[in-house]
Length: 170
Image (cartoon, rainbow, N blue to C red):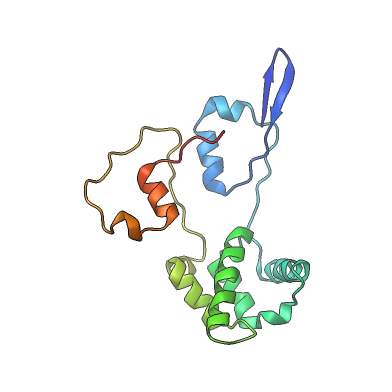
């Protein structure tokens, strides 16, 4: 994305996201007008997912042997082949294995991590869930009831309660 003033570019931004971001940009003609290039990403197939996970583990000083073959397949399935989702799921599965006292991640740990993240439904459908995010719209009215006292919520949850939509970043 580029922003120009008097035929001089003063800001270039690279946006990377899911199809949801693409749809959000397409819904704003002024924003879409400023895009120079679009590259459609597709999810990794099982072979590409294994290569991607191996690359990530090697760069972190690990080895693909850390993930058993069933775990690699589960990461690709539950993550829908999307790298960011596979990263999140693998991180949580590694933690599950650590809690179980294991040095390798099994399919079961990946499935438990997926269930904890609420991604079990995604596996049945074979693709990531789409989430609709509002862009620069008026904040919805706040609920007057709280399910948990403010002191017991995480910092992220407290910020989310204070700012129903994300505050603008500088």
